[in-house]
Image 1 (cartoon, chains in turn brown, orange):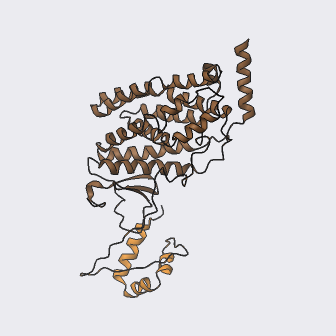
Image 2 (cartoon, one colour):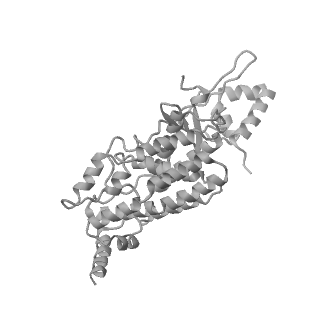
Length: 281
Length: 86
């Protein structure tokens, strides 16, 4: 079918001056033109969405969100110390996930939206226990895991959890679908080479990448992304548009560095040293 | 409340329907007329007015701002040592 066939075209405003237009093969960022009779000014209305085009719509929304975050200051080089900070962030991201998904499932069920409720229930099961993987990784590094995650709360992870919590509180928590999709799509950027680079920073014989592997291209997130796209494609156009906008928002929050900048290695080392002293007392 | 581009373009359209001299100037010196009516004119951009008739319709093919995908975000570079922001 041609790329311009009405049933295979998806578009959604992802900002005041940004519309993602998608075919089953690609996505464009379109800047609405106030001068012209713009065919993308009005929201799409057809349902269901084409599955491939919906995938590209969400892909474009993620990319626009990351772009909107701008270039972050270069992070400090990857090291065991920095990885502890990342693991703390992964813990905080994952520990609330099953509960918030179950809350969303209840809202979807109450609204009579069984497909969405089933999706949330399946995902709550799939994501259960992933916080424990982060704790195991921290223990593998010889650290008091629970104390570490209590002391280290990366601001962006906290902002993401706040966004997730707010989405789950909606009467029809479509933002939860958007949150899951944005996070899982971005996780796919971590490929096997990246996992190997992290592993290379760890002491010999230490496996501290369990949580990363699950949330990488080598884990289950690739299948989850496909499931998310299939779910969204089956929704009414207004809901697909709402999810695309929320995907962009989550991707931006996820990629926006903390206003305070990256924490220093010296600060991190100081925190861990304090925890070590507490653990020994 | 300030007028939108569409508000101003409606005013210009009806004025051109009503006033042949204005229409001629609009077609021949478009940027000046647009500026006179408070429309933002960008330097380096040409503006062209075309008129529909009973036997001719103009369709504007909009410009795309470019492809967007996650894969192209890093211009082929691998992930940095930390995902930004975490």
